[in-house]
Length: 429
Length: 101
Image (cartoon, rainbow over all chains, first blue to last red; front, side, top):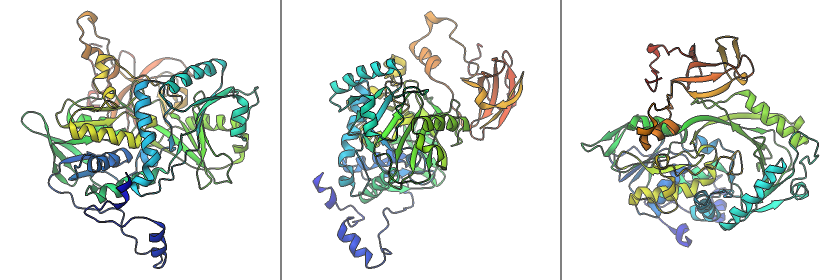
């Protein structure tokens, strides 16, 4: 999208550039234009997106930029990017086993590769590589099989020996006598990380520029249906807003919205925790995940080690998990990366993830005409943000799924066409 | 972090327990006449309320017995603990998902 930078929406925002930076430096950076407006909700819209995280904002952006539907509102009950978008460990990759997953995550990765330019917003997208470790002979053999399957889908990935891993990650402990010895792994070099907040802000700014109303502190409390049961609008904490085309992208709260709309989703809300250490000098310039011990590590640009854990086993909406999960995660971290043992934990947090029985998302029509759901991304939704928004906007605009999104229908649970990515995803997500 | 009162062993840290998800789900009694939709609901669709939820727990690092808990999924407050074969307090509004059980 070479013209993206020159687009002029109703707000006519100036571009971010080095000249703009220099110009604003002269006024002590006090005169930057707001990145998006905070409009009052209109009585009706051509389309409404419920949920102002990365996926919802991306949906709104692509509705406006690809499909020309610009009279769109994004309704966010808190502040944009304040849910899982701001709580994940920012890992991006597309090395999934099954063809359906490979297609949707690779679609996302290809969009990531040009996204900072398209949005005119520095997403700090860094293709620093993502390594997944094998801790047993069996895991290594299964990994070889998976790598071949992934390569057949045209996605870059390669098997690593223990020595290869040690070369890429000098701080890793490759002693074969430890509880979970490193026996090799595989890497996707195009994988990496991006700044999660920037993704929400970049999409918000670009969508706003095309006329999308981003309405924060606006919680959906009910759905309006016409005589035939088709969707007509939403009741919100800021009044009734009408639209015949509504997409829900609410992650952990998807089941709550489905309850309001009168149907059930095969989704369970679970806490997923992560933590960061105090900042230190650069020690790791890639991302390393471990399926067997549910622990993954990368280093932020500020120097904090970012460590992700597994989910808690129980249902929760509390945005906090149990301490034993963090103990388990830190035990694995100290064994695999002994230098972290004396670091202090700066903070820990939890987010509520929408887990699906087959660990694959739902991008689908629903039993209610005009109401669409994009949910079930569970523990690994951040990496999919651009692709998810892109295919969901397509579904909402044309009322039929595109080939990439079609397998992720809600109907698959009835038909038995599950896309089982438990473990096959290569991780703990 | 939760303190779960096992009906046999008393209050213990939640790390001692295994989770069994929603309670009172009965297998369809006549498999031959059960539709695909009904099988899908039995296999994959569970309630997921933000509020009181009747669920199963097992004291894995203790007596290893299953029991039921009504817990608020938003506050983690435990509202009722009861044994297998017993039912949730109707006042909590979490009636059995499937009356067959």
